[in-house]
Image: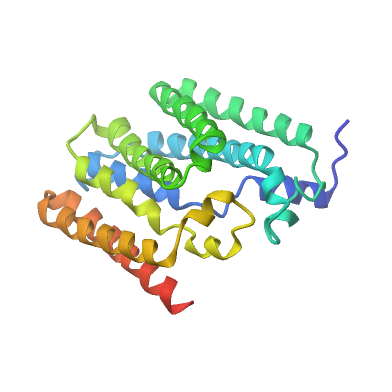
Length: 246
């Protein structure tokens, strides 16, 4: 049996990474693009069910990641303190928790927004593929992260207005992933792929991405340009913050 106490409940909650909510903003950005920023045409109830169901699905995905990565997390000073690698939560307990969240998320989607269930299954299997395969391949790991960013934006557009021609914005979302977690190169023991990156490569990649983002801003339509400018400023902030904290 699973013995439950306050500390263990907190550990289960921490597995879900509820504080990691930027992906919800990506969905909302896609929704705004779909309705062309006309909130009077937005189905608010549908959006609530989409965000609630998808949040639960992503909580399950985060739990899956910790289950699959527990050996690598043991090598990281910070990640080794997480509930699974530290042994506070057993892997079979985490698996049951993850399956429960997945079932609830899919049931919510099937009942209230059936098309969402297709996206959720795609995210679930892609994340497993990323964790087991793409994450171990230099540079392809960033493409995998970026694909998830683009897919969340695409999902928001598709669920609330049909598939629209925002390919440049989707492309940006993939490029954005290269800004994530550069500080990890200082702890190359945690993941072997980090040994393939150098500061020079990172600088060149960031220069290429910022240049591409400027082109995206120039060639997108008026509504998509708003999102592109916001994301460009966010990316620029990440670059300045990265070098400012070094």
